[in-house]
Image 1 (cartoon, helix red, strand yellow):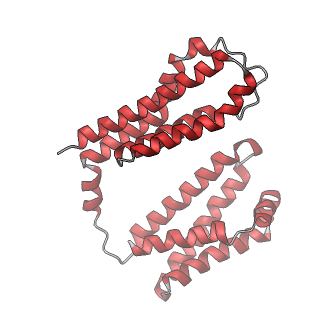
Image 2 (spheres, helix red, strand yellow):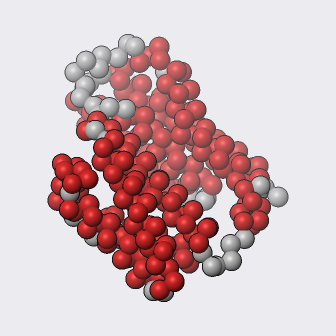
Image 3 (tube, rainbow, N blue to C red):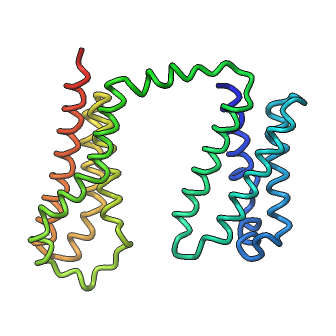
Length: 240
């Protein structure tokens, strides 16, 4: 496992700590013709070799360098200005999957896949997976549909807002509340609710719209209530 950790550490150092913004901008402009791209790849390969500190891992370092380059080139030619966040997440996911595959296939460390299988078969794994899917996707859609009749009556023509910001704010607040419930930190839920109220106070005061205030209040209470219910359900299901 320590080998996998070192591979991930090398990736994080190379992709974030030792990659200046100017390098990223040049790679996006010149793509495969950018000299910074190849310096970036050389740094990744060197970091793997340095952190593993063993000559026998030269092939793994070379494969990390090569695979990283292939993924980066695909990203550079595939991404556009409007889909950079998507490509960033996909790029990082592919890098991590590649490191995991290299670790499994080339590591001399004992890798007990049976333990992983047993972990996946634990009831807690499926309970938490279901709860997280419910909190991130299902509940958001359910709340949106529940409030759809009221949302139509709101005048939001002059409202400047980030695209789908409300959706992601809702997901994050439900995940926070769920985490606080399953870890027993109930007081943190009050802090989160107070913090959201402070941030929303200015918007509500400026709008002077009673419908908007009521809509936000109902949406917030529904979101918090769903997360609390999900947390309590998980705790109940996990009880011995």
